[in-house]
Image (tube, rainbow, N blue to C red; front, side, top):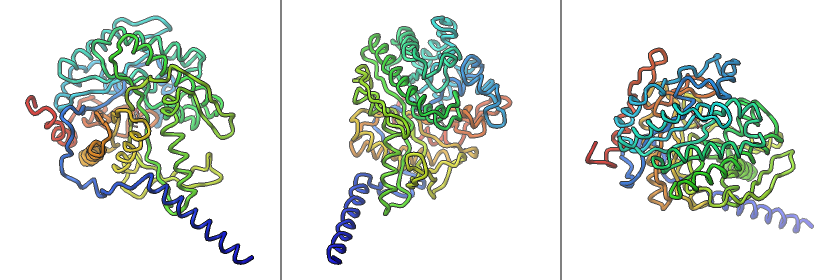
Length: 462
Ligand code: BGC
C-alpha cells in the first residue's frame, strides 16, 4: 500500500517537473540582461521603417464631437482635466512634420478622427478631409511614409449614442467610414491600421469601466468584441477593394505576462490564460475566421465570420511592459496581476525590453505575419530615461530580426507629450516635450538617441 502511494507521489512529481520544463522551454528567457546599459547601436535592416506615433484625439485639440469630449466634460479624467487644445497639432501640421524630419524619421503613424470627418451619420466634413489630405501630402513630400489608423479609441458622439462598439450597425458604419478614407487617400497611404488596441478598448470600456462607455458587463463585452471584429473585417474589405496593394493590420496592446513563481505550475497556467485572453484572442479570431470568446460567467461565443479570413497583412504590436501573474482562485479567471521588481516608468509600468523580444518571437511563430512595432514608449517626465529605453527596445527588435522574425518597422510612442486618456496630461511620453501653457515643443535628450538610430537608415540625406 505504502509502496503504491510512494510510487504515485513520485509519478505526480515527475509529471509536474516535466510540465514545468515544457512551459519554461516554450517561453525562454532572453539571454541578455542589463539591456538598459547597452550602448551599442542596434543594427537594423536598411529598409526598416523607424518613426513615431500619435493619435488624433490625444494631440489635435478641439475635438468636441466624440465620446471622450463628453466624458471629459463630465469630469471623469483625473484632476478634472480635459483634452482641450491638447497639443494643437491641428494647427501645427508644418511644425510637427518638421519635428519628424528633425528626428530623421522615415515613417509616422497617425489616426483619423472619425467624429471630425463624419460629424453626423453619412454627412462628411470636406474641410476636415482636406486637412488630413494636406498632412498626408506633406508627409510624403518629406519622405515620411504614413501609417493611418482608422479608429484610435474615440468614437463619434452619434455612434456612442446608438450603442458604440455594441451597436447593431457599428460594423457597417465603420466600414462605410473606412471606404470613404480609402477612396480619398488610397494613392497616399499604403499602410493601414483598422483599429488600435481593441483589447484595451474592450477592457477599459467593458471590464474595468474606466473609459467610455463605463460598463462592467461581460454580456456587452462579448457583443462589443464581436462588433470590433466585424468592424475590422468590414473596414479591411472596403480598403482592399479600393486598394488591393494596401497593407492592413490591427495594433494590439501586448503585455509580457510571466509567472510570478517560476516553480509553481498554477502561476504558469494563469500567465498562459492571461496571454491567450488578452494578447492573442483578437488575432486568433481573425486567423481562424471565427468570432470566438470565452468569458467566465458567460456562455461562450463561437460563430463564423468569413470576412476575417485574409483580412490582415501584418500584426501591429504595441508594447509597454511586463506583468507578473500569480494564480489566485478568488480573482477573475484565476489571474492576479503584480508588477515586477525592475525599474518602473512614471506610470508604474515595469521597464522590461526583453519582453518585447519574447513577444515578437511568440507573435512571429504564432501567425507568421510581418510585424510592425506600432507603439513603444515610456512615461518619463525627466526625459532622461527615454533614450536608453528606446535603444534597449530597438536592440530587442534587432535581435528578433536576427533570429528570423519579419519585423518591418518601429514607431515610438510618442512624438509629443499627449493627452493620456484617463491619466490626463501628467504622464509625458513625448520625444518632444510640450509646454502646457505655450504648447511650445522642445527636444528631450532622446531626440539625439533617435537621430543616432535613424542616421544609418538614410545616410545620404541626414
Ligand atoms: C495607446 C495610446 C496611449 C499609450 C500610452 C497605448 O495603449 O494606444 O493611445 O497613449 O498606450 O498610455
